[in-house]
Length: 335
Image 1 (cartoon, rainbow, N blue to C red):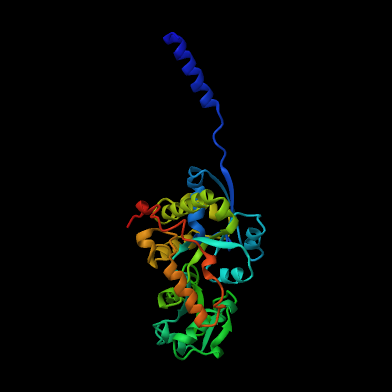
Image 2: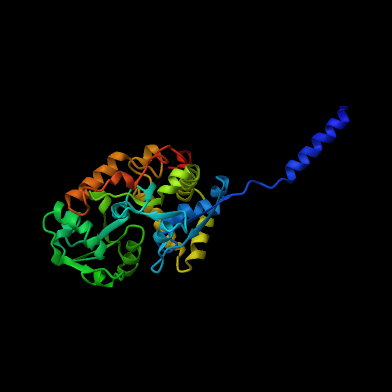
């Protein structure tokens, strides 16, 4: 074949290659556990900056909220991933529901107790002096059981329901109130004119993983590559949200949740970084999302000791470490 002919054939092949459609992205849906907020920022970041696309994924975030049932959608196969937790899966395992955690974005659960300054409640143990502790029923029957077992002076009579209104706490200086370190302290500070004392449960011994990526055991068995890509891209999304330009992600959050403000988003970001919500413990050396067998066993054993879960449950069915602790995205950290 003459050189000219070979060049024409090569040009034609290149043209055909250029005209060929790009490989289709895998469609993936991820259900959150609440209305869009800064605590979901890394997932929105991976959508906004194209990280999911780079990993071959077309991700739709299905917003949670008071009327949502996103975990039920996962179980029924209507969505692919869910923003879950550690404790809740033990009941699922006991019931034979085939779900599993594949990553834990939050090394520390953001749950806190707040107290007023200048009233002698300056440590977690001091909160036993409170006349009233405003907390949700879910905290009363779990975290508070741990508090009573580990700190003297706590008693059931201190409990009053928290109705997501800080006014009763603000009005009573000898009270304490639950909240998220990323949220409630800002509202309280704006109302009182000074910041409250803030105590993370996670810094005082009650330390479950939080904001997990939960999926079905079927997905892990049959779509391990897709699960790995979603986990890796989500981790990179979180690093970029924490340390990069997150404006586009915040715009998406505000689009999904118009009541969200720039002030709240900025506060949430600062608190997540200052308190090591994502980057602390094992995540400092092995990357965001890391889970370890030792920590899983330690938390489960503690719950069994408190009689909060059935010790016969095979807790290892609630998680797998095969997709995490690989150092993905750690090069994006900016001190």
